[in-house]
Amino acid sequence: MFQVRVEKGAKGCFYTFIAFHFRTQDVYSELEKLQCSSQKAKSAALSFLPILTWLPYYPVKQYLFSDVVSGLSTGVVQLPQGLAYAMLAALPPVYGLYSSFYPVVLYTFFGTSRHISIGTFAVISLMIGGVVVREAPDSMFYVFPARDTRRVQLAVVLTTLVGIIQMVFGLLRFGFVAIYLTEPLVRGFTTAAAVHVVVSQLKYLLGVKTQRYAGPLSVVYSLKAVLLDIPNTNVTTILLGLACLVFLYGTKHINERFKNKLLIPIPGEIIVVIVSTGISYGLSLSDHYQVDVVGKIPSGLLPPSVPHFSLLPNLISDSFAVAIVGFSMGISLAKIFALKHGYSVDGNQELIALGLCNFISSFFQTFAITCSMSRSLVQESTGGKTQVIAGLLGSLLVLLVVVAIGFVFQPLPQTVLAAIIMVNLLGMFKQFRDIPHLWRTSKIELVIWLVAFVASVLLGLDYGLLVALTFAILTVVYRTQSPKSSVLGHVAHTGLYCDVDEYEEAAEYEGIKIFHFNSSIYFANSDLYVNTLKDKVTPPMKPITLNSGSIVNNAKLHNSSFSF
Image (tube, rainbow, N blue to C red; front, side, top):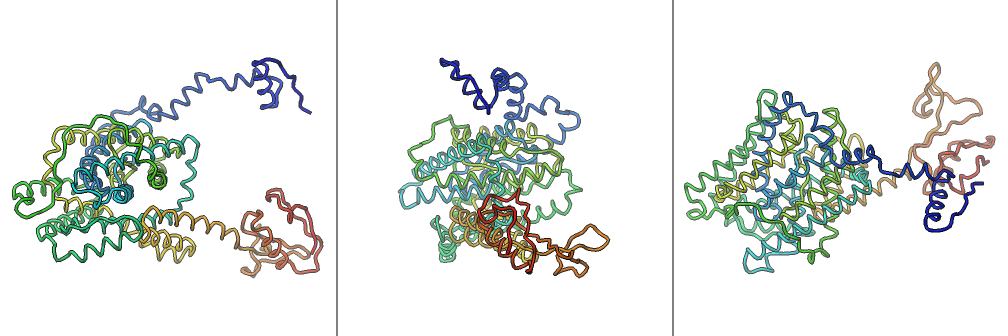
Protein backbone atom coordinates (compact mmCIF):
# COMPACT_ATOMS: atom_id res chain seq x y z
CA MET A 1 0.00 0.00 0.00
CA PHE A 2 1.25 3.50 -0.86
CA GLN A 3 1.90 5.65 2.22
CA VAL A 4 3.08 9.21 2.64
CA ARG A 5 3.88 11.25 5.70
CA VAL A 6 1.51 14.20 6.19
CA GLU A 7 3.40 17.45 6.75
CA LYS A 8 2.08 20.43 8.71
CA GLY A 9 1.72 24.00 7.51
CA ALA A 10 0.95 25.44 4.08
CA LYS A 11 4.21 24.24 2.57
CA GLY A 12 3.74 20.80 4.09
CA CYS A 13 0.20 20.56 2.74
CA PHE A 14 1.48 21.43 -0.74
CA TYR A 15 4.21 18.75 -0.57
CA THR A 16 1.67 16.22 0.70
CA PHE A 17 -0.63 17.01 -2.24
CA ILE A 18 2.23 16.52 -4.72
CA ALA A 19 3.15 13.21 -3.10
CA PHE A 20 -0.40 11.86 -3.26
CA HIS A 21 -1.02 13.19 -6.77
CA PHE A 22 2.09 11.63 -8.33
CA ARG A 23 2.12 8.58 -6.00
CA THR A 24 5.75 9.16 -5.05
CA GLN A 25 7.90 9.77 -2.00
CA ASP A 26 10.41 11.83 -4.03
CA VAL A 27 8.51 15.11 -4.03
CA TYR A 28 11.49 17.23 -5.08
CA SER A 29 12.06 15.32 -8.34
CA GLU A 30 8.42 15.79 -9.29
CA LEU A 31 8.65 19.50 -8.53
CA GLU A 32 11.67 19.73 -10.82
CA LYS A 33 9.61 18.19 -13.63
CA LEU A 34 6.98 20.89 -13.15
CA GLN A 35 9.51 23.69 -13.42
CA CYS A 36 9.64 25.70 -16.65
CA SER A 37 13.16 25.16 -17.93
CA SER A 38 14.68 27.26 -20.69
CA GLN A 39 14.30 24.33 -23.07
CA LYS A 40 10.58 23.99 -22.29
CA ALA A 41 10.09 27.74 -22.61
CA LYS A 42 11.81 27.70 -26.00
CA SER A 43 9.68 24.76 -27.16
CA ALA A 44 6.49 26.54 -26.07
CA ALA A 45 7.53 29.73 -27.86
CA LEU A 46 8.31 27.85 -31.07
CA SER A 47 4.98 26.03 -31.01
CA PHE A 48 3.10 29.31 -30.46
CA LEU A 49 5.14 31.25 -33.04
CA PRO A 50 5.92 28.71 -35.80
CA ILE A 51 7.63 31.41 -37.86
CA LEU A 52 10.60 31.20 -35.47
CA THR A 53 11.26 27.58 -36.48
CA TRP A 54 12.07 28.36 -40.11
CA LEU A 55 12.61 32.11 -40.62
CA PRO A 56 16.23 32.06 -39.33
CA TYR A 57 16.99 29.40 -41.94
CA TYR A 58 15.12 31.04 -44.85
CA PRO A 59 17.05 30.23 -48.08
CA VAL A 60 16.99 33.63 -49.75
CA LYS A 61 18.54 32.57 -53.06
CA GLN A 62 16.25 29.59 -53.57
CA TYR A 63 12.95 31.02 -52.28
CA LEU A 64 12.94 34.82 -52.61
CA PHE A 65 12.12 35.20 -56.31
CA SER A 66 9.32 32.61 -56.32
CA ASP A 67 7.87 34.07 -53.11
CA VAL A 68 7.83 37.57 -54.62
CA VAL A 69 6.07 36.35 -57.78
CA SER A 70 3.59 34.39 -55.67
CA GLY A 71 2.93 37.33 -53.34
CA LEU A 72 2.23 39.74 -56.18
CA SER A 73 -0.02 37.21 -57.95
CA THR A 74 -1.97 36.46 -54.77
CA GLY A 75 -2.32 40.15 -53.89
CA VAL A 76 -3.72 40.90 -57.34
CA VAL A 77 -6.42 38.27 -56.72
CA GLN A 78 -6.94 39.28 -53.08
CA LEU A 79 -7.87 42.84 -53.96
CA PRO A 80 -10.98 42.25 -56.13
CA GLN A 81 -12.07 39.30 -53.98
CA GLY A 82 -11.92 41.47 -50.86
CA LEU A 83 -14.21 44.03 -52.47
CA ALA A 84 -16.56 41.35 -53.79
CA TYR A 85 -16.84 39.26 -50.62
CA ALA A 86 -17.57 42.34 -48.51
CA MET A 87 -20.60 42.88 -50.71
CA LEU A 88 -21.51 39.24 -50.12
CA ALA A 89 -21.32 39.89 -46.37
CA ALA A 90 -23.74 42.83 -46.81
CA LEU A 91 -21.01 45.30 -45.80
CA PRO A 92 -19.39 48.28 -47.56
CA PRO A 93 -16.58 47.08 -49.89
CA VAL A 94 -13.75 48.77 -47.99
CA TYR A 95 -14.25 46.37 -45.07
CA GLY A 96 -13.27 43.54 -47.38
CA LEU A 97 -9.94 45.29 -47.92
CA TYR A 98 -9.41 45.64 -44.17
CA SER A 99 -10.14 41.92 -43.82
CA SER A 100 -7.61 41.17 -46.55
CA PHE A 101 -4.81 42.98 -44.71
CA TYR A 102 -4.73 42.54 -40.92
CA PRO A 103 -5.46 38.76 -40.72
CA VAL A 104 -2.88 37.97 -43.40
CA VAL A 105 -0.14 39.75 -41.46
CA LEU A 106 -1.08 37.97 -38.22
CA TYR A 107 -1.29 34.51 -39.80
CA THR A 108 2.27 34.90 -41.08
CA PHE A 109 3.51 34.72 -37.48
CA PHE A 110 1.09 32.21 -35.93
CA GLY A 111 0.07 29.83 -38.75
CA THR A 112 1.70 26.50 -39.57
CA SER A 113 0.75 26.26 -43.26
CA ARG A 114 3.14 27.71 -45.84
CA HIS A 115 0.71 27.81 -48.74
CA ILE A 116 -2.87 28.69 -47.76
CA SER A 117 -4.03 32.25 -48.45
CA ILE A 118 -5.83 33.74 -45.48
CA GLY A 119 -8.50 36.39 -46.00
CA THR A 120 -12.07 36.73 -47.18
CA PHE A 121 -13.93 33.62 -48.35
CA ALA A 122 -17.31 33.28 -50.05
CA VAL A 123 -18.94 30.79 -47.64
CA ILE A 124 -17.92 32.65 -44.49
CA SER A 125 -18.90 36.00 -46.03
CA LEU A 126 -22.31 34.61 -46.94
CA MET A 127 -22.85 33.29 -43.40
CA ILE A 128 -21.93 36.70 -41.97
CA GLY A 129 -24.23 38.39 -44.46
CA GLY A 130 -27.11 36.18 -43.39
CA VAL A 131 -26.56 37.10 -39.74
CA VAL A 132 -26.26 40.87 -40.22
CA VAL A 133 -29.25 41.01 -42.57
CA ARG A 134 -31.32 39.06 -40.05
CA GLU A 135 -30.33 41.37 -37.18
CA ALA A 136 -30.39 44.60 -39.22
CA PRO A 137 -32.87 44.22 -42.10
CA ASP A 138 -33.54 47.02 -44.56
CA SER A 139 -36.99 47.58 -43.05
CA MET A 140 -35.45 48.83 -39.78
CA PHE A 141 -33.73 51.83 -41.37
CA TYR A 142 -34.73 54.89 -43.33
CA VAL A 143 -31.21 55.72 -44.52
CA PHE A 144 -28.47 53.37 -45.77
CA PRO A 145 -25.56 54.85 -43.75
CA ALA A 146 -27.27 53.98 -40.46
CA ARG A 147 -28.03 50.48 -41.74
CA ASP A 148 -24.45 49.93 -42.88
CA THR A 149 -23.06 51.18 -39.56
CA ARG A 150 -25.19 48.72 -37.59
CA ARG A 151 -24.28 45.84 -39.91
CA VAL A 152 -20.58 46.59 -39.51
CA GLN A 153 -20.99 46.60 -35.72
CA LEU A 154 -22.75 43.23 -35.87
CA ALA A 155 -20.11 41.71 -38.15
CA VAL A 156 -17.29 42.96 -35.92
CA VAL A 157 -18.84 41.54 -32.73
CA LEU A 158 -19.51 38.25 -34.50
CA THR A 159 -15.88 38.13 -35.63
CA THR A 160 -14.67 38.79 -32.08
CA LEU A 161 -16.76 35.87 -30.79
CA VAL A 162 -15.52 33.63 -33.59
CA GLY A 163 -11.94 34.46 -32.66
CA ILE A 164 -12.51 33.73 -28.97
CA ILE A 165 -14.17 30.39 -29.73
CA GLN A 166 -11.38 29.31 -32.07
CA MET A 167 -8.66 30.32 -29.59
CA VAL A 168 -10.35 28.49 -26.70
CA PHE A 169 -10.83 25.37 -28.84
CA GLY A 170 -7.17 25.50 -29.83
CA LEU A 171 -5.93 25.93 -26.26
CA LEU A 172 -8.15 23.04 -25.14
CA ARG A 173 -6.69 20.87 -27.93
CA PHE A 174 -10.03 20.57 -29.71
CA GLY A 175 -8.51 20.42 -33.18
CA PHE A 176 -9.93 16.93 -33.55
CA VAL A 177 -13.48 18.32 -33.95
CA ALA A 178 -12.75 18.72 -37.66
CA ILE A 179 -13.00 14.94 -38.10
CA TYR A 180 -16.75 15.14 -37.48
CA LEU A 181 -17.08 17.41 -40.50
CA THR A 182 -16.68 14.55 -42.94
CA GLU A 183 -15.77 15.21 -46.56
CA PRO A 184 -19.28 14.44 -47.92
CA LEU A 185 -20.79 16.78 -45.32
CA VAL A 186 -18.38 19.63 -46.13
CA ARG A 187 -18.77 19.22 -49.88
CA GLY A 188 -22.56 19.06 -49.69
CA PHE A 189 -22.57 22.09 -47.40
CA THR A 190 -20.26 24.17 -49.60
CA THR A 191 -22.26 23.25 -52.71
CA ALA A 192 -25.38 24.54 -50.96
CA ALA A 193 -23.46 27.68 -50.00
CA ALA A 194 -22.60 28.16 -53.67
CA VAL A 195 -26.31 28.05 -54.52
CA HIS A 196 -27.01 30.70 -51.87
CA VAL A 197 -24.19 32.88 -53.18
CA VAL A 198 -25.31 32.75 -56.81
CA VAL A 199 -28.92 33.55 -55.91
CA SER A 200 -27.80 36.45 -53.72
CA GLN A 201 -25.70 37.90 -56.57
CA LEU A 202 -28.35 37.68 -59.29
CA LYS A 203 -29.79 41.07 -58.39
CA TYR A 204 -26.39 42.73 -58.80
CA LEU A 205 -25.77 40.94 -62.09
CA LEU A 206 -29.17 42.05 -63.44
CA GLY A 207 -29.19 45.49 -61.84
CA VAL A 208 -32.53 45.04 -60.05
CA LYS A 209 -33.48 46.34 -56.59
CA THR A 210 -34.74 43.56 -54.33
CA GLN A 211 -34.73 42.94 -50.61
CA ARG A 212 -32.08 40.63 -49.16
CA TYR A 213 -33.54 37.73 -47.15
CA ALA A 214 -32.08 35.61 -44.36
CA GLY A 215 -33.17 32.46 -42.53
CA PRO A 216 -35.08 29.35 -43.69
CA LEU A 217 -36.25 29.43 -47.32
CA SER A 218 -34.32 32.68 -47.89
CA VAL A 219 -32.96 31.31 -51.16
CA VAL A 220 -36.51 30.68 -52.38
CA TYR A 221 -37.71 34.15 -51.40
CA SER A 222 -34.65 35.81 -52.95
CA LEU A 223 -35.02 33.91 -56.22
CA LYS A 224 -38.74 34.71 -56.37
CA ALA A 225 -38.07 38.42 -55.79
CA VAL A 226 -35.45 38.54 -58.56
CA LEU A 227 -37.67 36.70 -61.05
CA LEU A 228 -40.60 39.02 -60.34
CA ASP A 229 -38.38 42.06 -60.89
CA ILE A 230 -36.77 40.88 -64.14
CA PRO A 231 -38.81 43.37 -66.24
CA ASN A 232 -36.85 46.13 -64.48
CA THR A 233 -33.47 44.69 -65.49
CA ASN A 234 -30.82 47.29 -66.33
CA VAL A 235 -29.62 46.35 -69.81
CA THR A 236 -26.23 48.05 -69.45
CA THR A 237 -25.62 46.30 -66.14
CA ILE A 238 -26.41 42.82 -67.40
CA LEU A 239 -24.38 43.24 -70.61
CA LEU A 240 -21.34 44.36 -68.63
CA GLY A 241 -21.82 41.56 -66.10
CA LEU A 242 -22.17 38.87 -68.78
CA ALA A 243 -19.08 40.16 -70.61
CA CYS A 244 -17.10 39.88 -67.36
CA LEU A 245 -18.46 36.38 -66.75
CA VAL A 246 -17.35 35.20 -70.19
CA PHE A 247 -13.91 36.80 -69.88
CA LEU A 248 -13.27 35.47 -66.36
CA TYR A 249 -14.40 31.97 -67.30
CA GLY A 250 -12.14 32.04 -70.35
CA THR A 251 -9.07 33.16 -68.38
CA LYS A 252 -9.68 30.51 -65.72
CA HIS A 253 -9.93 27.86 -68.42
CA ILE A 254 -6.69 29.07 -70.04
CA ASN A 255 -4.90 29.20 -66.68
CA GLU A 256 -5.96 25.65 -65.90
CA ARG A 257 -5.12 24.25 -69.33
CA PHE A 258 -1.71 25.93 -69.66
CA LYS A 259 -0.71 26.14 -66.00
CA ASN A 260 2.56 24.31 -66.71
CA LYS A 261 3.52 26.77 -69.45
CA LEU A 262 2.51 30.06 -67.83
CA LEU A 263 4.98 31.71 -65.47
CA ILE A 264 2.08 33.25 -63.57
CA PRO A 265 -1.69 32.84 -64.10
CA ILE A 266 -3.47 35.47 -66.18
CA PRO A 267 -4.89 37.90 -63.56
CA GLY A 268 -8.38 37.94 -65.04
CA GLU A 269 -10.02 39.43 -61.96
CA ILE A 270 -7.80 42.49 -61.68
CA ILE A 271 -8.03 43.00 -65.46
CA VAL A 272 -11.85 43.18 -65.41
CA VAL A 273 -11.73 45.42 -62.33
CA ILE A 274 -9.35 47.90 -63.96
CA VAL A 275 -11.00 47.87 -67.40
CA SER A 276 -14.58 48.08 -66.09
CA THR A 277 -13.62 50.84 -63.66
CA GLY A 278 -12.10 52.81 -66.53
CA ILE A 279 -15.17 52.29 -68.72
CA SER A 280 -17.50 53.22 -65.87
CA TYR A 281 -15.55 56.40 -65.16
CA GLY A 282 -15.17 57.39 -68.80
CA LEU A 283 -18.82 56.83 -69.75
CA SER A 284 -20.28 57.88 -66.38
CA LEU A 285 -22.27 54.66 -66.20
CA SER A 286 -23.67 55.53 -62.78
CA ASP A 287 -25.08 58.91 -63.87
CA HIS A 288 -26.10 58.21 -67.47
CA TYR A 289 -27.11 54.53 -67.33
CA GLN A 290 -28.05 54.05 -63.63
CA VAL A 291 -25.46 51.32 -63.15
CA ASP A 292 -24.85 50.60 -59.44
CA VAL A 293 -21.21 51.19 -58.47
CA VAL A 294 -19.10 50.56 -55.38
CA GLY A 295 -19.22 54.18 -54.29
CA LYS A 296 -17.07 55.96 -51.75
CA ILE A 297 -14.03 54.07 -50.46
CA PRO A 298 -12.46 55.90 -47.50
CA SER A 299 -8.70 56.23 -47.72
CA GLY A 300 -6.50 55.14 -44.84
CA LEU A 301 -6.93 52.62 -42.03
CA LEU A 302 -9.42 52.99 -39.21
CA PRO A 303 -8.12 53.41 -35.64
CA PRO A 304 -8.70 50.45 -33.32
CA SER A 305 -11.99 50.44 -31.41
CA VAL A 306 -13.75 48.15 -28.95
CA PRO A 307 -16.60 46.09 -30.49
CA HIS A 308 -20.16 46.81 -29.36
CA PHE A 309 -20.60 43.84 -27.03
CA SER A 310 -24.19 44.86 -26.28
CA LEU A 311 -25.03 43.14 -29.59
CA LEU A 312 -23.50 39.86 -28.41
CA PRO A 313 -26.50 37.82 -27.06
CA ASN A 314 -28.13 37.15 -30.44
CA LEU A 315 -24.88 36.15 -32.13
CA ILE A 316 -23.54 33.35 -29.91
CA SER A 317 -24.96 30.38 -31.83
CA ASP A 318 -24.01 31.94 -35.18
CA SER A 319 -20.43 32.47 -33.99
CA PHE A 320 -20.02 28.76 -33.24
CA ALA A 321 -21.18 27.86 -36.76
CA VAL A 322 -18.83 30.38 -38.40
CA ALA A 323 -15.92 29.31 -36.18
CA ILE A 324 -16.33 25.61 -36.99
CA VAL A 325 -16.83 26.11 -40.73
CA GLY A 326 -13.90 28.53 -40.94
CA PHE A 327 -11.57 26.14 -39.17
CA SER A 328 -12.69 23.07 -41.13
CA MET A 329 -12.10 24.90 -44.43
CA GLY A 330 -8.68 26.07 -43.32
CA ILE A 331 -7.35 22.83 -41.87
CA SER A 332 -8.58 20.65 -44.75
CA LEU A 333 -6.82 22.79 -47.36
CA ALA A 334 -3.72 23.19 -45.18
CA LYS A 335 -3.39 19.41 -44.86
CA ILE A 336 -3.69 18.94 -48.62
CA PHE A 337 -0.80 21.32 -49.32
CA ALA A 338 1.26 19.98 -46.41
CA LEU A 339 0.94 16.42 -47.72
CA LYS A 340 1.87 17.55 -51.23
CA HIS A 341 4.98 19.45 -50.13
CA GLY A 342 6.18 17.16 -47.35
CA TYR A 343 5.63 19.07 -44.14
CA SER A 344 3.07 18.91 -41.32
CA VAL A 345 0.48 21.30 -39.93
CA ASP A 346 -0.77 21.41 -36.35
CA GLY A 347 -4.57 21.46 -36.13
CA ASN A 348 -4.61 22.98 -32.65
CA GLN A 349 -2.13 25.71 -33.59
CA GLU A 350 -4.19 26.44 -36.72
CA LEU A 351 -7.21 26.98 -34.46
CA ILE A 352 -5.21 29.37 -32.30
CA ALA A 353 -3.84 31.17 -35.37
CA LEU A 354 -7.26 31.65 -36.95
CA GLY A 355 -8.66 32.71 -33.58
CA LEU A 356 -5.95 35.34 -33.13
CA CYS A 357 -6.45 36.57 -36.70
CA ASN A 358 -10.17 37.04 -36.13
CA PHE A 359 -9.99 38.34 -32.55
CA ILE A 360 -7.21 40.92 -32.95
CA SER A 361 -8.33 42.05 -36.41
CA SER A 362 -11.90 42.61 -35.22
CA PHE A 363 -10.67 45.63 -33.23
CA PHE A 364 -9.69 47.13 -36.61
CA GLN A 365 -13.17 46.66 -38.15
CA THR A 366 -12.71 43.40 -40.05
CA PHE A 367 -15.10 40.50 -40.54
CA ALA A 368 -14.38 36.78 -40.04
CA ILE A 369 -11.89 35.14 -42.36
CA THR A 370 -10.49 31.75 -43.30
CA CYS A 371 -8.47 30.48 -46.24
CA SER A 372 -9.65 30.77 -49.84
CA MET A 373 -9.21 27.80 -52.16
CA SER A 374 -8.80 29.88 -55.32
CA ARG A 375 -6.20 32.23 -53.81
CA SER A 376 -4.37 29.36 -52.11
CA LEU A 377 -4.07 27.59 -55.45
CA VAL A 378 -2.67 30.77 -56.98
CA GLN A 379 -0.18 31.18 -54.13
CA GLU A 380 0.95 27.56 -54.40
CA SER A 381 0.96 27.24 -58.20
CA THR A 382 3.02 30.43 -58.69
CA GLY A 383 5.81 29.00 -56.56
CA GLY A 384 5.03 30.37 -53.11
CA LYS A 385 7.25 28.75 -50.49
CA THR A 386 6.46 30.66 -47.28
CA GLN A 387 3.97 33.08 -45.78
CA VAL A 388 6.60 35.63 -44.78
CA ILE A 389 7.12 36.91 -48.33
CA ALA A 390 4.19 35.56 -50.37
CA GLY A 391 1.57 36.32 -47.72
CA LEU A 392 2.98 39.63 -46.51
CA LEU A 393 3.62 40.97 -50.00
CA GLY A 394 0.04 40.28 -51.03
CA SER A 395 -1.28 42.06 -47.94
CA LEU A 396 1.01 45.04 -48.56
CA LEU A 397 -0.48 45.38 -52.04
CA VAL A 398 -3.93 45.61 -50.44
CA LEU A 399 -2.58 48.14 -47.94
CA LEU A 400 -1.33 50.30 -50.80
CA VAL A 401 -4.83 50.43 -52.27
CA VAL A 402 -6.46 51.23 -48.92
CA VAL A 403 -4.02 53.99 -48.03
CA ALA A 404 -3.26 55.61 -51.38
CA ILE A 405 -5.46 54.67 -54.34
CA GLY A 406 -8.75 53.35 -52.96
CA PHE A 407 -10.65 56.23 -54.58
CA VAL A 408 -9.71 54.84 -58.00
CA PHE A 409 -12.14 51.94 -57.56
CA GLN A 410 -15.16 54.05 -56.58
CA PRO A 411 -16.68 53.87 -60.12
CA LEU A 412 -16.33 50.05 -60.16
CA PRO A 413 -19.72 48.54 -61.16
CA GLN A 414 -21.19 46.09 -58.64
CA THR A 415 -22.13 43.71 -61.44
CA VAL A 416 -18.39 43.14 -62.01
CA LEU A 417 -17.95 42.05 -58.40
CA ALA A 418 -20.96 39.74 -58.77
CA ALA A 419 -19.33 38.18 -61.84
CA ILE A 420 -16.07 37.65 -59.92
CA ILE A 421 -17.93 35.91 -57.10
CA MET A 422 -19.89 33.64 -59.44
CA VAL A 423 -16.88 32.52 -61.47
CA ASN A 424 -14.96 31.70 -58.29
CA LEU A 425 -17.76 29.29 -57.34
CA LEU A 426 -17.35 27.07 -60.40
CA GLY A 427 -15.21 24.64 -58.41
CA MET A 428 -17.93 24.25 -55.81
CA PHE A 429 -20.58 23.47 -58.40
CA LYS A 430 -18.34 20.74 -59.80
CA GLN A 431 -18.95 18.95 -56.51
CA PHE A 432 -22.28 17.75 -57.94
CA ARG A 433 -20.10 15.12 -59.61
CA ASP A 434 -19.75 13.56 -56.16
CA ILE A 435 -23.28 12.16 -56.38
CA PRO A 436 -22.70 9.37 -58.96
CA HIS A 437 -19.33 8.55 -57.37
CA LEU A 438 -20.83 8.20 -53.88
CA TRP A 439 -23.73 6.18 -55.30
CA ARG A 440 -21.19 3.60 -56.46
CA THR A 441 -18.97 3.64 -53.37
CA SER A 442 -21.03 4.45 -50.25
CA LYS A 443 -24.77 5.00 -50.03
CA ILE A 444 -24.51 6.31 -46.46
CA GLU A 445 -22.02 9.02 -47.44
CA LEU A 446 -24.23 9.90 -50.40
CA VAL A 447 -27.15 10.45 -48.02
CA ILE A 448 -24.93 12.63 -45.80
CA TRP A 449 -24.00 14.74 -48.86
CA LEU A 450 -27.64 15.11 -49.91
CA VAL A 451 -28.88 15.93 -46.40
CA ALA A 452 -26.17 18.58 -45.97
CA PHE A 453 -27.01 20.08 -49.36
CA VAL A 454 -30.81 20.07 -49.11
CA ALA A 455 -30.91 21.19 -45.46
CA SER A 456 -28.45 24.02 -46.09
CA VAL A 457 -30.27 25.23 -49.21
CA LEU A 458 -33.72 25.22 -47.61
CA LEU A 459 -32.99 26.06 -43.96
CA GLY A 460 -30.02 28.37 -44.40
CA LEU A 461 -26.35 27.67 -43.76
CA ASP A 462 -26.52 27.86 -39.96
CA TYR A 463 -29.45 25.51 -39.43
CA GLY A 464 -28.35 23.39 -42.37
CA LEU A 465 -24.95 22.80 -40.78
CA LEU A 466 -26.61 21.80 -37.50
CA VAL A 467 -28.92 19.34 -39.26
CA ALA A 468 -26.05 17.90 -41.30
CA LEU A 469 -23.83 17.44 -38.24
CA THR A 470 -26.63 15.76 -36.30
CA PHE A 471 -27.39 13.44 -39.18
CA ALA A 472 -23.71 12.56 -39.66
CA ILE A 473 -23.42 11.61 -35.97
CA LEU A 474 -26.57 9.49 -36.26
CA THR A 475 -25.03 7.63 -39.18
CA VAL A 476 -22.09 6.74 -36.94
CA VAL A 477 -24.54 5.26 -34.43
CA TYR A 478 -26.33 3.45 -37.26
CA ARG A 479 -23.10 1.91 -38.52
CA THR A 480 -22.29 0.53 -35.07
CA GLN A 481 -25.80 -0.90 -34.88
CA SER A 482 -25.62 -2.68 -38.23
CA PRO A 483 -22.07 -3.96 -38.67
CA LYS A 484 -21.19 -6.80 -40.98
CA SER A 485 -20.58 -10.16 -39.33
CA SER A 486 -19.30 -13.40 -40.78
CA VAL A 487 -17.86 -16.83 -40.07
CA LEU A 488 -14.30 -17.13 -41.35
CA GLY A 489 -12.63 -20.11 -42.91
CA HIS A 490 -9.02 -20.86 -43.78
CA VAL A 491 -7.91 -20.66 -47.41
CA ALA A 492 -5.64 -23.63 -48.03
CA HIS A 493 -1.91 -23.03 -48.52
CA THR A 494 -2.26 -19.38 -47.41
CA GLY A 495 -2.44 -17.45 -44.17
CA LEU A 496 -5.77 -15.94 -45.17
CA TYR A 497 -9.11 -16.32 -43.41
CA CYS A 498 -12.13 -15.29 -45.47
CA ASP A 499 -15.93 -15.28 -45.24
CA VAL A 500 -17.12 -18.82 -45.95
CA ASP A 501 -20.30 -17.50 -47.58
CA GLU A 502 -18.37 -15.43 -50.12
CA TYR A 503 -15.32 -17.62 -50.83
CA GLU A 504 -15.72 -21.28 -51.76
CA GLU A 505 -12.04 -21.90 -51.04
CA ALA A 506 -12.47 -20.91 -47.40
CA ALA A 507 -12.97 -24.00 -45.19
CA GLU A 508 -13.87 -24.13 -41.51
CA TYR A 509 -11.94 -26.18 -38.98
CA GLU A 510 -13.95 -29.02 -37.51
CA GLY A 511 -15.38 -28.09 -34.12
CA ILE A 512 -14.18 -24.48 -34.33
CA LYS A 513 -16.08 -21.37 -35.37
CA ILE A 514 -14.14 -18.20 -36.14
CA PHE A 515 -16.62 -15.36 -35.79
CA HIS A 516 -15.81 -11.90 -37.17
CA PHE A 517 -17.78 -8.83 -36.04
CA ASN A 518 -16.88 -5.67 -37.97
CA SER A 519 -17.37 -3.12 -35.19
CA SER A 520 -16.18 -2.15 -31.74
CA ILE A 521 -18.34 -3.75 -29.08
CA TYR A 522 -19.96 -1.54 -26.45
CA PHE A 523 -23.23 -1.28 -24.52
CA ALA A 524 -25.34 -0.13 -27.49
CA ASN A 525 -24.56 -3.12 -29.72
CA SER A 526 -23.78 -5.84 -27.17
CA ASP A 527 -27.21 -7.47 -27.61
CA LEU A 528 -26.75 -7.45 -31.36
CA TYR A 529 -23.32 -9.06 -30.97
CA VAL A 530 -24.62 -11.89 -28.78
CA ASN A 531 -27.69 -12.57 -30.95
CA THR A 532 -25.66 -12.54 -34.17
CA LEU A 533 -23.12 -14.89 -32.64
CA LYS A 534 -25.90 -17.29 -31.65
CA ASP A 535 -27.29 -17.23 -35.18
CA LYS A 536 -23.91 -17.91 -36.76
CA VAL A 537 -22.87 -20.70 -34.40
CA THR A 538 -25.00 -23.80 -34.94
CA PRO A 539 -25.60 -25.96 -31.78
CA PRO A 540 -24.46 -28.25 -30.35
CA MET A 541 -21.19 -26.47 -29.49
CA LYS A 542 -18.88 -26.41 -26.54
CA PRO A 543 -18.82 -23.29 -24.35
CA ILE A 544 -17.53 -20.31 -26.31
CA THR A 545 -14.55 -18.45 -24.95
CA LEU A 546 -14.26 -14.74 -25.67
CA ASN A 547 -11.13 -12.68 -25.45
CA SER A 548 -12.84 -9.60 -24.03
CA GLY A 549 -9.83 -7.50 -23.10
CA SER A 550 -10.76 -4.72 -25.55
CA ILE A 551 -14.51 -4.94 -24.99
CA VAL A 552 -16.15 -2.14 -23.05
CA ASN A 553 -17.43 -3.45 -19.72
CA ASN A 554 -20.95 -4.79 -20.13
CA ALA A 555 -22.95 -7.17 -18.01
CA LYS A 556 -23.83 -9.39 -20.96
CA LEU A 557 -20.19 -9.78 -21.99
CA HIS A 558 -18.54 -9.56 -18.59
CA ASN A 559 -17.88 -13.27 -18.18
CA SER A 560 -15.10 -14.73 -20.27
CA SER A 561 -17.25 -17.69 -21.39
CA PHE A 562 -20.89 -18.61 -21.81
CA SER A 563 -22.99 -21.44 -23.27
CA PHE A 564 -26.08 -21.47 -25.45
